[in-house]
Amino acid sequence: MRGAFELEIEGQKFNCHLNLNAFRILTQKFNVKLGDLEKAVAENPLEVMPQIAWCGCLNAAIRKQEKFEMEFDYFAALLLDGPETVEMLSNKMTEVFAPEEEADTEEGN
Image (cartoon, rainbow, N blue to C red; front, side, top):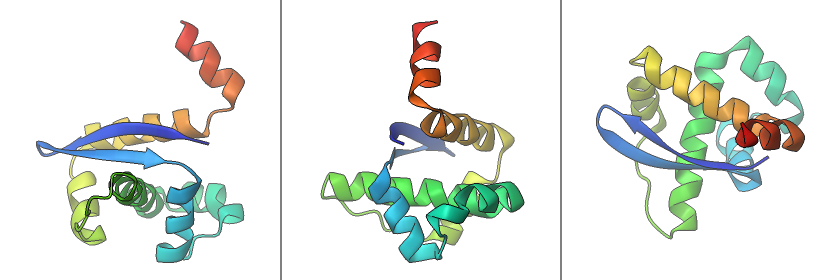
């Protein structure tokens, strides 16, 4: 489970790095248990997907020893403002969660 990508929201670009550390942050900040993650996404994607994205952006900043000071609610408001951003995030998250074999097959096409 690992993926790095760029989110563009209202002209602002955010680096997002989803890996185990991003999910560690998710469990700490939002009390989402890893074992319940799939269920949480299915039951409440408009809450959990922005949380994962925010944690990925925070993680990307931490990895570069930079600050990411955008509050979650503001980030979510920007992220959920347009369907194209939500769709792009959904596609990126699907890639991150895809099994290695599936991801390798898609890259070869």
